[in-house]
Image (tube, rainbow, N blue to C red):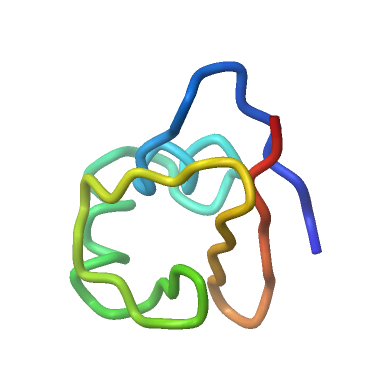
Length: 69
């Protein structure tokens, strides 16, 4: 499981996908989410602006990522 360390209270899912190098642009990240390719805390997420807080996890293509402070 890879960590994404954030300095703010939360990060939006589409921004997390970009920061981890999983999406080249925000538009691609949003398409990945709408195509049901991303799970948040074990469930498919369709909310492009989903806020992720420390302790939240997201998955893409069999890889898991966790948000940390």
